[in-house]
Image 1: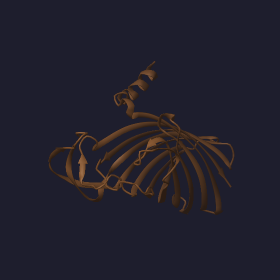
Image 2: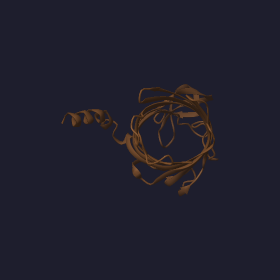
Image 3: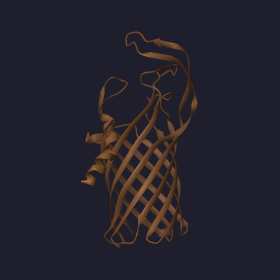
Image 4: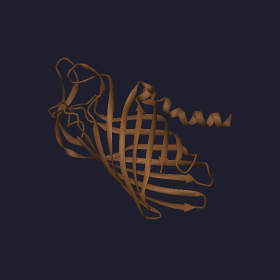
Length: 275
């Protein structure tokens, strides 16, 4: 009974968010090949469901290279092709489209340091990534075409068991170059829609802030030196600042501009093959 009350207490604040509380799922497979000692190349494919299992959300194909210059230090670089999947979403052309569209290209570099205390391993990983949005119709006053982000992830893993290694991870992500601008003049109304707006001047991509917080609980199920399975639960809190401006970037709407918050619980599983 005490455990049930505790669980309800944890989720009670989420109920206040109503429709901003979503569920998701991910499944992925990864192949890792040791070129020489300390130098590895990997490739993977990940499937992500849309929020609340509304259909396919995206497919992500990745390739990476990692190297351990020291026993406790690991560096890596990689590329990820992100293929979003649209399901009956209205585009600017007022037509409906279902299928893959407007891929995103992501490159990254990361460094991770690990230290052991008894059976516990602590790992801090920093990743700097650049994501290019190829959608030709992107409103660049609302969104950055080349998004720069920094992710910091601390993982605590228990390695005292041979076939199962549980872990707990905490991650924050910072947006480094979101759009920003200034407003001037008094509030005005549009014609028929009667939306309130101010005169807006885009000043560049200078808005930097922490926009994502994550907690991950999972474990590595080790079948052999080559095969492992990793189920996990990811709790993802998004704190995003949205600017709703027209395509000319000279009008900002007050009703759809500001902080947007959402919370998502994601169930995931990853299969890894190493050789």
